[in-house]
Length: 251
Image (cartoon, rainbow, N blue to C red):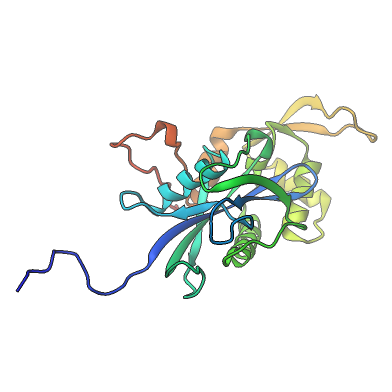
């Protein structure tokens, strides 16, 4: 009898993919980044950036690689959202996906479709083409998690320029939470954070009284909040064979 190869199994097993939900804020509305599929199945339809996990990489590495290859977005902090494993979610084969999400400032990234993506584009979260596979379910789950994180203390400063007004921050929180927020209490809460610092500047080109501008102490913000939400980040351009995935563990 021929000996079976070690770790070679006769039973079928699923493939694994990583998908990315990328939220942006343009100062007026929440945005989501989708790609137009350039290959079958569903060629020409819209979907989340993502793809199959290679045999020599983690799901985290696959998520960041696929995001960069398909949209040119890189160097962002990402958080694992969850596992989606509906049996018939992919017509090609049995596929389980691990989904991630991130908050970004759209103007920081030159979005370009690449690899399996014919194009990449930002859409309003209120009006976007329904994506294929089970990606609509993933988007809804990511938005629900975003709301929970905002209630838990994530301020969303990743979506802002280095200088911003509390009014802009108020608008973002109102859009995410879908709730009426007391402006006075919100102002007191935001200005109490060590990483939100007042400047001597005010907004220009406004029809009303210019609002004071605030700045972000990025180092303090990262140390106080990033670890709390289990975020990961590395750049493919800087990755070598000896690099380890840098993962911040929860406090």
